[in-house]
Image 1 (tube, rainbow, N blue to C red):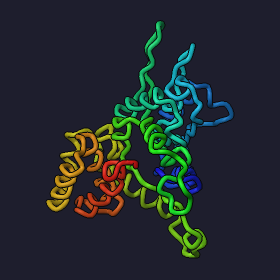
Image 2 (image 1 turned 180 degrees about the vertical axis):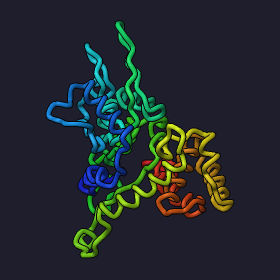
Image 3 (image 1 turned 180 degrees about the horizontal axis):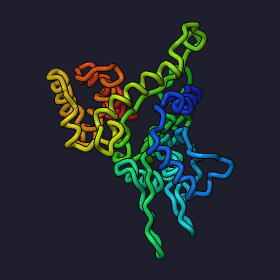
Image 4 (image 1 turned 120 degrees about the horizontal axis):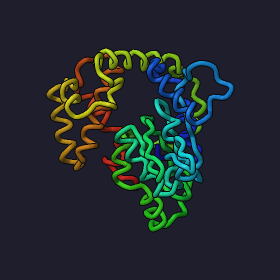
Length: 292
C-alpha cells in the first residue's frame, strides 16, 4: 500500500486478520509447533487457533526477522506462518534484510545455516507492506506540497528492488480521504460479512485441491494453475495484451492469474472472466504506472 501519512494504510493492515478464513487443524498444529520451538507458548493452552499477525519495527535485526542467533530460533517470517507479516514504512528496512524475504515469499520456507547445523523453518505468510511515496510522504498529494527533490525520491524508492516488488501480488495506491469521505454516514460491510465471503471462497479452494497438500490458490505451481484456471477467452485476450503492453515477467503473469482465480472464487464463479482479470490487473499499480 502506497500513500501519504494518515491515509489509513496501517489501519487497513491491522484489520486484515478480522476477515481471514479460520485455520484448519493442520495449520493450527504448524503454528503451535513454531511458537513452541520459540518458547512463546507460556500462558497458552491447547492449539493456537488465531492466525498470527506480526508487525516488526524497521529497526529489527536480520536474525529477528529471518531467524538465527547463537541458538538458531525462528524469526518473524516463521512466527507469521499461516498468518500476516506486516512491514510498515517498508523502505526504512535495510535492503539486505528485505532481499532475504524473496526466498520465503517464493518457497514458503527459510533456511538457516550454522556451523553446527542447518535448520529449515516454515514461513508461508501473507506479506502486507505500507510505505509513503517519498521521504516526506506528500509526493503528488493534492493538499500538501512535497519538499523532496527528485533525487531524494528516486533514492528512497530504489531501496525496493524489482525482484522483491515482483513478488507482491497487490500493489495499490491509498489516497488521502477528504472530509466528506471521512464523515460519510453510509455504512459499509462489516468484517463478519466479508469474512463469511472469504471463508466460502477458501472452502471452494479446499474442495478444488482435495487430496493434495495445497489449501489456497497462492500455493499453486504452474502446472496446477493451468489445470484449474478455467479462463474465459475474453479474459485470455486481456491478459495477453497486458503481458505485452506492461512487459510482465513470467512471475507477475502467473501471480495476476492466481489473483484473478481468487477474485472469481470470491464472486462464486467457476469461470475466470474478463472482469476478474481486469480487477487483478488494476491491483498492479507498480507494473502499470511505476511508483513515481
